[in-house]
Length: 222
Ligand code: DX5
Ligand code: ZN
Image (cartoon, rainbow, N blue to C red):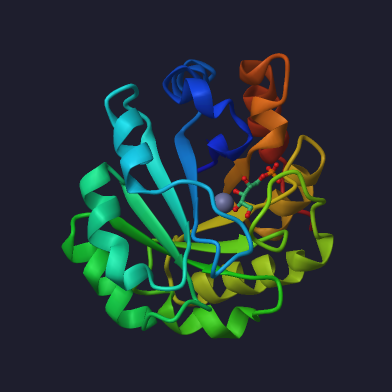
């Protein structure tokens, strides 16, 4: 199932609640919330109190992307703030299996993200335990970067491994997704599309979400 997850990183932080409502009314399936600690990535965004402040403004599914060094330590804070899914990085300092199980025991879905330099083989062993694999299509840390088309074989490898394991897992792509790049990501096997600039910097976010969804519905090649 195709899901569009607008990233609030590109939104107007002074009006975060209204921006979330805009995404919801525009037909988004999830709201992507990028948490950066200035240590795992060279940038600082926002933390659990900010997520908590928008929780009652929308009923959208909260897709929280933790770009932080110690996700295991903070998972509970994000669950309490209203996260529905917590995605953490394979490259973080926390143990992957322990973090997946901590997130699940907090009642949230759990995703594992991989940076561009990390191969598909790193996350394939966790496919049966994770709800989602996030294949980064830019270096994490900043919005507005260009899509890395060379990540598509990684998406395809994760999809193939999931099919072989009989698991209909969500595969998310994040970074540089627009109405053109979404097509190659969908063809490679991704079904959850994060888009910051393409949605919130558009004069018509609802139309932008609609175009992403329509273009993601491409038939796979072959
Ligand atoms: C980058 C973040 C992304 C970012 C995407 O580190 O994880 O979610 O908001 O922004 P765009 O869609 O503008 O590339
Ligand atoms: Zn993100």
